[in-house]
Length: 178
Image 1: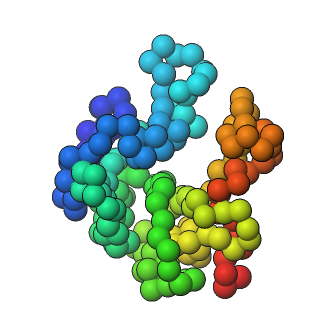
Image 2: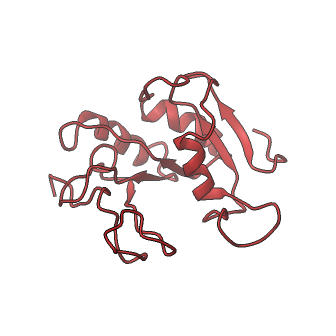
């Protein structure tokens, strides 16, 4: 961990590799979260938390499929004995039965050793009906976020422009088990 770095303070490739595609999903999501225009203009390209720094945990080998490391392995990496990240973004998901053993693993870690961590997860892209969220969005100790429309334009040409509208593909709650 090198907190003197401008943006990425740590990159953990011990679970997978560091052979990533340029401009991949992680790059897009990271920019949305912590992008900071070096010209200082608060405009397109400015993230939600521009002063925040990143710890990257590699869950995908190059162009291959993503693999779940398990909650404890991931949080051990990001938490850094209490000196690391307290907010983590998980913009990935899996299909499976509602509230699986996978969720029990994540919830146990978040209510136990890592109870200081806020785990923000993607609702997923299997919307538009109710109860379409998947793991880890249907876990109990995570904060799930869906995709709203752009203020500047209609993302899916349904004329539902603006932050009050969700994209048609964004998954929605409630969870299947309530």
